Image 1 (cartoon, rainbow, N blue to C red):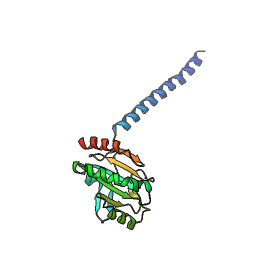
Image 2 (image 1 turned 30 degrees about the horizontal axis):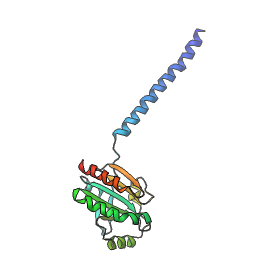
Image 3 (image 1 turned 60 degrees about the vertical axis):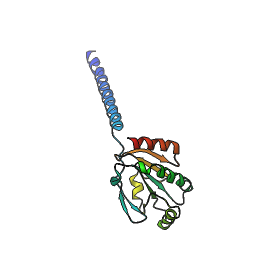
Image 4 (image 1 turned 180 degrees about the vertical axis):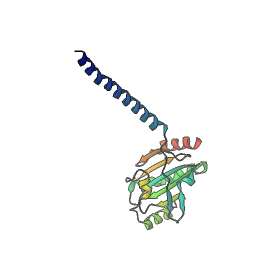
Length: 175
C-alpha cells in the first residue's frame, strides 16, 4: 500500500511542477510582449525622383508610411485626405512616404503624383521588398504610423478614421 501512495504522489508533484512552469512561461511571454516595442523595419525607400530615403534618417519625426496603388479606388479616394493630413501636421514634425505597390506601373505612379501635386515623398516598391518588410502588406491602402523613436504605434488597413488618426498624430507629435 505504501508504494502505491508513493507512486500516486509522483504524478501529482510532476503535475504541480509543470503547472508552475507553465504559469512562469506565460507570465514571461506576457511581460516581454508588453515591454518590447514593435520597431519599424530598417528600410530604404526609392522615390519616384530617384532619391533614396532611409526610414532611419527620419528618426526624430513622426512618420506615416502609406501603401497604395493607382488602381485601388479606396487609395485614390483617401489620397486628398492624406494630403490634408500631411499639410496640417508637417510643420510640427510629421513626415509621410506613400509607397506604391510592386504591381503599380512606375509611370502611372509618377503621373498620379505629378498631376495631383502630392506634397510628400512618393516611393516605388518595384520588387515588393518594402511591403514584405512591413509584415508582408498585401491589402491597400495600409498605413503605418511610426513614432519619433522608430516604433510602429498604429497600423490601419483600409481608409483610416481621420479624426482618430489626427488625435493619434497630435499625441505622437507632442511626445
